[in-house]
Image 1 (spheres, rainbow, N blue to C red):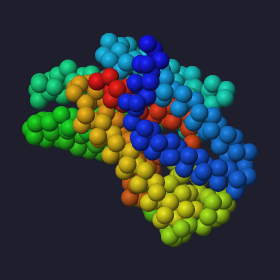
Image 2 (cartoon, one colour):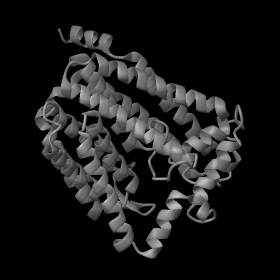
Image 3 (cartoon, rainbow, N blue to C red):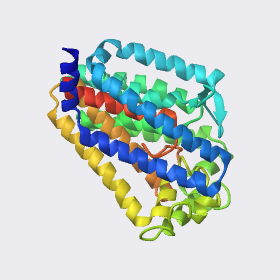
Amino acid sequence: MKFKKINWIFKKIDWLLFIAICLLIILGLIVIYSVAAGSGTEQSIINFQKQIVFFILGVIIFFLITLFFDYRILLRYYFVLYIFILILLVAVLFFGKTIRGTTGWFNLGFFAFQPVEFVKVVLIVYLSKFFSDRAKYIGQFKYLILSSLSVIILVVLVALQPDFGSALILFSLWLVMILLTGIKKSHLLILISVILISVCIFWLFIFQDYQKERIKVFFNPSLDPLGRGYNVSQAIIAIGSGGLFGKGLTFGSQSQLRFLPESQTDFIFAVLAEELGLAGIILLLGLYIFMFYRLIMIAKSLRDNFAIFLTVSTISLFFLQIIINIGGNLGLLPITGITLPFLSYGGSSLFANLILFGLVESTLIRS
């Protein structure tokens, strides 16, 4: 009986979506390997080896969730997950490992576990439950306030690390969700006014002069091209030099000669553009577009409100991360430290992404 059930589930899996995800991860592995082989640094090579292990473990997690986990269990334990992730965020502030100025990792030996990546998963589950329960009454202002409180707590804890990029993602995810649920124009105007007033108060009365200068460079790297704007300048040079078919794997001058920092994480798009050119960019964007297409098809096929919100918020999260990362590499948006989904090196982000896709597949099978 169990074999028949598993066989039935295998037939229901959206294999085209799974293949697209695997191709994205493999493309990321190719670029990570290129950086490792070209630079020859020990850490880059270790990162490549770790990413292969993360890929294998991530796929196992994906299938375990898809085959055996009923997403409706989350309806009972969503608040427990929220409290658990709150505890993790508080704990990482006191016991976490500091990397590049951010205290956001637990050192587990083999790799550093980053709780904020799983905060995104839990927030999606929490907001999906919240909005699906109140779908008929979401236009009421009190529910807008209640939903914002749960998000603000997470945003503040993440900002204290400080990880402003992830804090921005969490807040933006909530903002997209309330826009999709059909917020009243009057409530939207109030929300925008509160945000603008808060920004003005911080700028005029709280931020010091040096903090204002950092923010100015944050939004306009050309103000300090040899300092804080150096990373973006090098990324733009790398992307512009790629041409139609790129310089070839391991032959990117900016990435291989280490002019381009964080080449396996934040700026992996610039490495891909330099070494694979416009053809590589088209391949990457094509895979992303196909991934979104399959997710939208899944969302349209669902009949359960919670499942719909879960899938739509997953689409929103990945869209935000892709736009912010690529926009930052192109100099169109500030660099926030947001990695490129499925391409950038990182076990925590890869596991969290595959958990989300496992949940989406579970909704497709069981909704």
